[in-house]
Length: 388
Length: 196
Image (tube, rainbow over all chains, first blue to last red):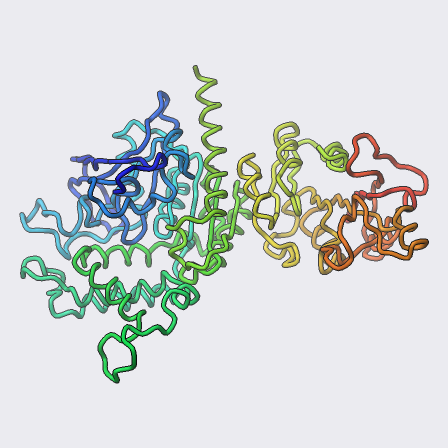
């Protein structure tokens, strides 16, 4: 954390835990008998609870979206560029809720939690989660916080899919939806990359069919490879080229397999840090949730029909160099929303940073998301004024 | 509101479903939606315009008009509006057909190249006209398909469409719009209302 905190930071934040003892039925047919969700909030909920914004996280994200946990934290939360006083999601006007999804590895119930039925950790027995399951659990948290209807549900990538699901399955609880760098369904290429990541993990000898914790080990090699493959899809060819080019770590080629190019060093570093920081079973589960998400598939491949229940106003945002979930995927969603006669706005933001652009600061991105959120804040203010 | 937009505002029926091509900062759609219960979308590529629309609560979609309207099904709207964009398109003739595919009616406003001052500039001075409605020099103008009041009327007839109303005036001034004599000579800007 910087010594003098910027006035646009939410500052020090403390995660909270909500425990639920009512069973949660899941899409896979099983149920979670009880569970915990860890979450953070920024800003203040107004009297009518009409200014709440839910942040949905992506594959490796979590509840720590903004601010710092400790004064010696080096980095703020993962979406600090866009959440805070005066930022796109302005915590002076909104009450922001960020939650770690079920199946995660940052505090919410997941594969590393204890299975009450066996007394062992869940491990690979933890049920596969779907985007719908996450939305249902997030709605239970909203009930607990006294939020009947979110002013906005916002998320990027896999988070954007949760936003879509909120809009479709709980329309009365969402006033506005921002779907950023997402897709209405994964392509065969997307699923193929996920499968390579899963195979990397599952074929690691230290994986033990997911029971690595009981063997006091970690499938580090597998997770490392999974992250390296994933990371390539998050960047653009241009951003990798601009950052690393063909730069060498050493003065000359050494005709061997040690790290020679800067990009190799970078990928290995990314893989290494991730391999001890993230849980392998969670990674597997998250990629499956991505693969399974397909609202059109549940409606004879008719996306406008799948979206027909939604009543909120949509903002869809894509990034020009994102090839993981390319702008064309967002256009499919926009066209379907248009065909379904829904309120929708769309912006394709010029950025060199590929899929990762949704996490980064960008003037135009901030103007678009900020413009959308400003209108929502004004709506909230007007409605609150009418009541009092 | 700009005078051409004010005239268009009057022409739009209550509760219409409208598509505004090149909607700018969304002024027209915002007024139509709050006062005439109009619904619909604006298409725009200017980033500032898109942000302004979002702040106003106008549904705006980033889309290049030169890519056409293929993503919009037939008869999605009651009315398509296009102001000051016809002359920058690669194929205005195709766009006219597209507009009358997605709606039964359209309103198109564009600068009239045959306005007397434009004629004076070209006819007497021998120079490409520069005016309020055509503010660019010949070498940096986005206006690649300039036309006249008469030219456009001919295009509509040629493509089998019906002109139901037209007016000319000075787009920057209030209360100047009327159905005047010699529109091709006296109108700086032209507005047409066209049906299939």
